[in-house]
Image 1 (spheres, one colour):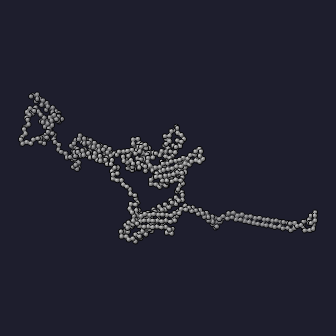
Image 2 (cartoon, rainbow, N blue to C red; image 1 turned 180 degrees about the vertical axis):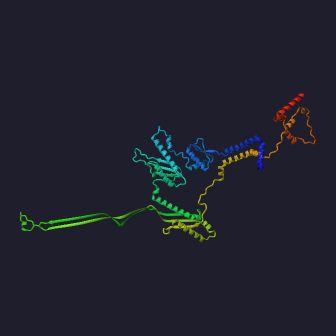
Image 3 (tube, rainbow, N blue to C red; image 1 turned 120 degrees about the vertical axis):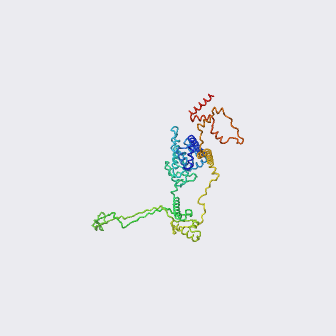
Length: 547
């Protein structure tokens, strides 16, 4: 074992059980003082953040603050949240971004506190509308990216003296972060319209917390202009992404910028076509007609004589010419079905009519690739290669009238991101002054405890054991006690010699420490051997009686 450990073990053995228990108690006390001091001195002062919260809000607030690294505590009532002093504003801004607390959006729990007695129909209607608004607001806040929402609903109402019924309408105010507000607004409109009876989506107005109108009136996404604009943006974003994928491995993401302008035709086209196939005819029906006609005709003839002009005289007719005819007709009609095909094509797609692409490349990057001694001709050749690469990645078509331009320029640093103003030194010190004071007080307490408690203890434990002075034996203690003879024949101490040194010597001090008072020595004799001490006392008593 090392020499220091051996010295510590030997010192502990020399202390005895009583002293070891005292040392253990002192060590436990010192540790307790340090622990209590660290807890109370480093514990920040708390101030109230919110009061009167629901249990669900308290749980959500605790999760958000814990993830942000902000300490918090819950009040004894369970409905209040406390945070360290100086972090209240930061905690409230953080919770406001998360849409907390949400206790203000009361839903159907409003009916829990509504009594049946004295409640009018108007109050019931208002409570129903409030509950519906709160439930819809909660549902909207559950959408990813929506931090807070507030809903106002105007229910349908038909008065006694009105001919037309008032249609329901609604307005929604949202606070969002990191989402496409217009797409979310359209989803919110349909959600609210489906939740309110008789409400249509075009009667729902959606705004953001900054007062910007996100959606109102007819659905703008169904108009041809909005559709064309959306298709153009999609095509431009896709072409720009193709350019980035092509140039990033070669130039790096920060050494080029691309801009794309695409003219898109989104006209709807409908084509109808009917095709007949004369080779594929099918006999559909046959109609046959047959007719036979026979006719005989005789015509009487009156002779032209004088008798016709005499009165009361009847002329006798004679037989005239006779005619006869016979007609036989046969007719056959055959109907054929010819195979036909009708094709109707409706196209709702788009076509790119013209495309303009502009790409700027960081000239310093090209110099790094080509070397410091690169000539302008080499740079121009490399720019031409980049232009061919961009043309291949974007589907460039010269016949369509597309334009592409690639240039090498010097980039200006610091334009991609906005400079964030950092807090000053005094602001940082003011924010952490309480923590610094607590840390300083804790360091002082630990130093005092260590200097006045642990250091003497460590010195005592690590000190080398000194040989203990042997205590006087029983005979020495007996001889040191005064006897009647020595008391009677006691002589005064010899006078000091002229050359002797005045004052007590170290040996005299040691003797004085070793030789205690007679009463103490007698008590020590009793502790050592009671029987022998009793014999000595009886002997002294007998000598005094004889005298």
